[in-house]
Structures are given as structure tokens and as C-alpha cells.
Amino acid sequence: MLIADDKMPPDLLYVGGEWRPGRGAEITSIFPADRSLNRVLHGASREDVLEAIDRAEAAQRDPTWRSLKAHERATCLYRIAQGIADNADRIAHIQSRDTGKTLKETKALALSAAGTFRYFAAVLETAEDAMTPARGDYLSISAHEPIGVVAAITPWNSPIASDAQKVAPALAAGNAVLLKPASWSPLVSLELARIVEASGLPKGLLSVLPGSGGVVGDLLVGHPAVGKVSFTGGTEVGRGIARKAADKMMPVSLELGGKSATIVFADADLDVAIAGVLFGIFSSSGQSCIAGSRLLVERAIYDRFVARLVAATGRLVVGHPFDPATQVAPLIHDDHRDSVADYVRIGLEEGATVLTGGAAPRGDVYDQGIYYAPTILAGVSNAARICREEIFGPVLVVMPFDDEAEAIAVANDNDFGLACGIWTRDLLRARRVGGAVKAGTVWVNTYKQFSIATPFGGVKDSGLGREKGRDGLRAYMSQKSWYFDTSERPHPWAASVLGGGA
Ligand code: NAD
Image (tube, rainbow, N blue to C red):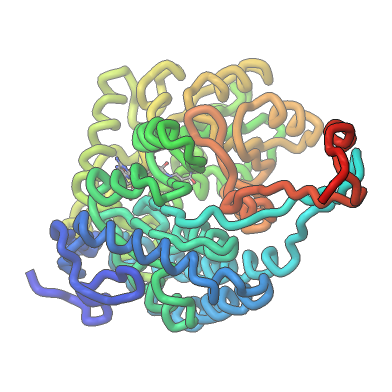
């Protein structure tokens, strides 16, 4: 296979502030729209990872970094933000080639990553420690300091955005960061390293270490010098990381999978609801942790709503990521499409009927790439595997419900708890239902809206901890309490035994 595109980053890793070939296993990045080769990259070896950890420890302890004032550190983050914004088109191109996402989406992700660095620079400059109310003759202060060396492990579905959500607050907090991107999408994280390097961040504070989860990821999680792991990915991998972290008494934040319910009540504005439901499941080709993959529709409007939804789904433009008209782009990898197709087969075995889609589209561009048609399944109960397990593709399951209590019960009858969408004109009902659903985020008459200023995370099997928001900075810091004596007297408990003399 020929390398189809000379804009791809070279076969070099960023290890402790140096660019050099990785000494680990080969990683092959392909363009999902036609399976052409983006790059064969040599991933990080054990030795590369150990060296990156050593350099991270040294760089983080270096007084020139540690003694920087918050506003000086923030300046560096502002430069990274600007660097990302200036290179947004290039980043978008690399990420679209690496993941198959539309250019429109990857450009938005790049700009959101720039916004993330800007936001955490601003949070850093304005973060305050607290002088706590004294209950004795002392001044008591609750202060925050960096953890030290932090590992950031990210998935393949939105790499530049997930990388920024971890790297920006971790650097802002004064840590060194070891970033491990997923093997299906390693390239854009290396481009981020180039921008970070150009910002003047001291060398060693960031390493980018593509490689397998079992080698690079496992080593990072278990290493005694790594003081925190921030992980985004699947629930089973996250659970394994949490177990290992328990042995080290290490904090972790885990952003995991989802099987989010969207609930449409009969009084909803149906045009708004249909557009929102389509966007919630089929944008990013359903490869999104917060995809609204279970749709519950009030029985009174079920037939009418589902008929319109199916018709609208059939009109979605499935196409090439570089075509501005495309709404649904290819999936990331043949193995992933096989897994999506397997779930549809399982659904049929469970008694589901296909209302639309249910196969890879055929002909022209479709035969060259890894496409899967937007699919709607119906006719199963919430107990079916296709309702319980994350498919992570363009597959929606629809079910009717009779009343509010049933909608809440079905939404909650799942191991995940990431998000929920509610469509109704009755805001009191939205408040009641949203309050009863166990999920980290509730959207009312909208879906998949995000703000870096608003915390994000899941409950139950969807994760632990929150990213984003002002407290997102604190997640990468450890808290220290200080007491300064103001009495200038020996402690009364021992004063009687001091005696005189020199
Ligand atoms: P994954 O769990 O397979 O991999 C995620 C990352 O973990 C990759 O970098 C991988 O190499 C690494 N990894 C794998 N095994 C490891 C191990 N033993 N030790 C350390 N690291 C290891 O997930 P994926 O397939 O890349 O991404 C899809 C999943 O991510 C979905 O479940 C999706 O819901 C989830 N996700 C969650 C969020 C969120 O914010 N909640 C966002 C995006 C994706």
C-alpha cells in the first residue's frame, strides 16, 4: 500500500521532549473512507515508556517549571490554544484521515481543543486556595499542588478533544503528562505534541506514546512514579485500571461507555425531537459515548413518530468524510464495523425487526470504505442485548412506553448511566424525569450539547469522577492543609514539663 497523503506526521514519537522512532510494535493507521494507508508508525516500547516517565519526573521537579507562577504557566497554555487554532485545518485533515470523521466535525473538535486549553489557562489564573476558619491560634490554609506525573489514556473516537480535556488541565495544574492515544488513531496526538513543543513548554513535561493498551497502557498504570491515571475508553478496560489503581492507592478518573436513553413524550415538538434524536444517535456515525442509542417513545405518538423518524433516517447523507454534504461518515475500522454488524445480527436473533438500514451500503464510494447504514431496530424489550450493551455505531433501538414511571424505569434499567435526553414541552415533567434518571448529564429538548465550562462524566458503569468545569483543574491536583501558629506560646499540653534553662 502507498502512503496516500504527505500531510501525515512522520514515523516518530515524542519521548521526553525528543522526536525519535519508536522501538515498539508497528501501528497501521488507515483512512476508513478507502482503506488507503496513512502511516505505519513504530509505537512505544517498554524502554521508550520508562524513559518518558524518568524525563517526566525530572522535568516536573525542575525548579524552573515548579517555580512558575500560575499566570506564567497560563501563558504557555494560551500559546498552545493559539497554536491549535492556527493549525485547525491541518489537525482536522489528519484526524479525518485517521478516524474517517467528516472534516466539518474534526474542524469543530480542533477548535474545541483550542478552547479547552484557553479555558484551563483562564481557570488556572483565577483559581484560589482557601484560608479556612481557624478553630484555634493558627492560620489554616487549604492549598493545592500538582500530583506530579499523570498518565492520560484516550480512545479513538474523538482524539484531539479527549487529549485536550486531559492534557490541558493536567499541565495547567503543574504536572508532567504521558499521553497514550488509541492504536486506531495515533496521528493527531503527535500533531498536538508538535504544537505543544512550539509553545515553549519545557521538554519532558509532555510525551506522546502510541502503543498497545496491554503494553504501554498497562506499564503507565502500574508504574510507581505515575500518580494519577485519567482514562477515557471502554468500561471493562476502565474497571481493570481501577483495580490496579487500588493497589497503588492512586486516584483515577474514568470516562467510560454508555447506552443512553432518549425519551420522547407525546407533547414534544416533534420536528425538534426528530432532528435531535437523529443527531444524538447518527452524528459521528454513532461512535460516541453519549450516543442516544435507546429511544423510548410515548405510545400515543409511537407509530407516527417512528414512521417520520425512519423516513428522515433514510434521507441522511452517508458519504465521504471530505464531502461537505456528508452527515454519516465511515466507521473507524473493519473490525469495528464487523462488531456493529454482529450486534444487528444478534438483535435479529432476539426478535428485532429492521425498520431501516441493517447493512453496509453498496456501490461506488461505499465499496471502497468502511460504511454502515444508519439503522433503526424495533420489536424487542429492554432486556435484549442490543438494549443493554454499547454498540458504538449507527444503530438505534426504539421502544414504546405508556407513562412517565415506565419511561424512568426503562431508562434506569441498564448498567450504564452516562446521559439522557428528554423531549417534552412540560418543563416540570422534564425536571421530574431528569431528576429520577440515573445519568451524569440530562439534556432537555436538545442532545449532545457540550461546554468545557460544564462538568461531564457518568454514574454506574459509565465512570468515576468528572472532567471539564472549574473543578476539572483540581482533579489533577492534590490538596495540602497548612497550619501556621499565631500564639507564639508552647502548647499548653506540654508547657508544664518544659522547666527553665537554656
Ligand atoms: P478502549 O477501552 O478499548 O481503549 C481506550 C484506551 O485504553 C486506548 O488508548 C487503549 O489502547 C487503552 N487500553 C486498552 N487496554 C488497556 C489496558 N489494559 N491498560 C491501559 N490502557 C489500555 O476503548 P476504545 O475502543 O478506544 O473507545 C471506545 C470506548 O470509549 C467506548 O466504550 C466509549 O463509550 C468510550 N468513550 C467514553 C467517553 C466518555 O467521556 N465517557 C468518551 C469517548 C469514548
